[in-house]
Image (cartoon, rainbow, N blue to C red; front, side, top):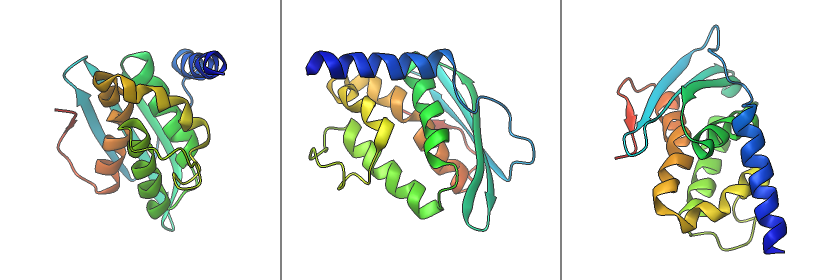
Length: 152
């Protein structure tokens, strides 16, 4: 079973790293933010187009490791169409998963779906920053903050 989970983890992470979804500058964005992980050099820009309190469209650009790129790609797929409150709840659930606060009950985690492939990251503290960079940058974009988000 652990081998199956590892295989799934590898497949999903590698697929989103090789072919990141929503990897583009978003035309007509209403909000954006930049993030930087000085530990490994990951950089990301998150673009949002908010409409009627929902994330109408979302994209990202940047460069980084496979974990960082896959996390940003899955973030954009997961959050398109969500409200700000839903995005915040998913951030909290995702962060709990990565920091080992996962109770093992996915309903408590707000139904993370494919994001659960990052569960193994909690065993590698330095990689948590890679996986959460896009998420912290998203929060900054939602808050319309202009300073660069740093994982340090």
